[in-house]
Length: 137
Image (cartoon, rainbow, N blue to C red; front, side, top):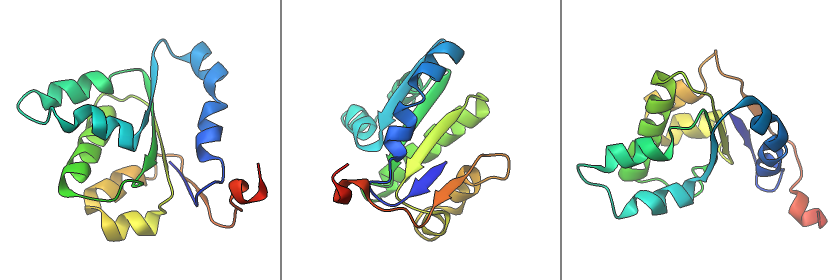
């Protein structure tokens, strides 16, 4: 879990792992939260669980910008499904978010914050970084 304000290079950090990912994993996938919601939007019915499972069944999944599209019951359900499917399959997942642990604890179901910030996970919370976009970088 990588948390910090906008423009501090969380997505760039994930992109910089590309060479390592290609050497270490047979399959990997990157999802921006908004894109996976778009992919699922018109299919949330009896087969949607199968579609979601297909979208996140790679050895490594990077799930970027969690919480960036606002919160709804449906989006929270999707996030919980992603977390549970990845966790139950014992597959590594990298999550990035502009939200911090305290934000997740306030805004999301306690099960989500508990799983994302479990002690066995690596948590990187960057509190004082400067938005690189404002510096022209």
